[in-house]
Length: 216
Image (cartoon, rainbow, N blue to C red; front, side):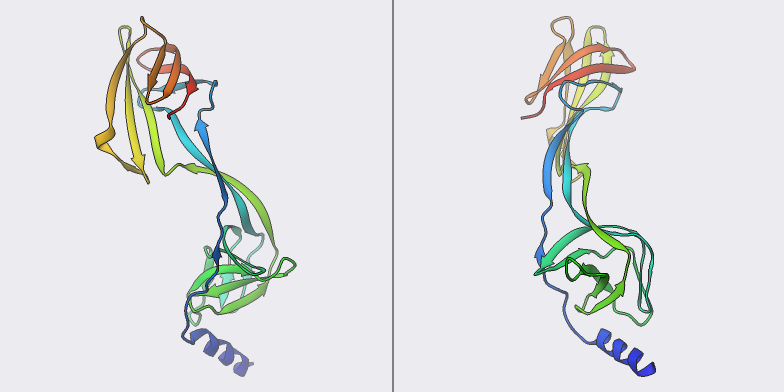
């Protein structure tokens, strides 16, 4: 038993490089928030419209704790990150290593009918364990990397104040910020950079509106 443990440890501390695989690209589609035509109410300072990204792809769902000699793999869902032949690779989050193990890099499942999940280390070593898992389709929404939004800033008389903001990778672009006023006695439709909203009611606490079109 001691010889086996020593052999495993020797393999893990051998020098090497990170595993290479073809990157996996999940499908992405942009969505409007709120959807076009939907009646929506927001308060002062809240977003009137924005863009989201729906991501659809494969993920590894570990259903029960994998308690291994060198690594523990905690339950949870990990997004797919790549392929190498029949082997699929997933995010290496939720893995706890022992004091004698190499740092984990990613998780892998070697074949479509495999019953084991492998911890792939930063030196490309694979340590595989029997596991209760499934590879499933997942869908989730995230912020678009480039974001344009309108903010409701209140009403004075017949005029409402709207703020325009831009963000790139969650960072504000102050040079593109703008504040505009719209006179509702002239029209209840307002527009900016291709986005058009129909204002149903507005006061100094909230605005009720519908999005007619979004940013160009």
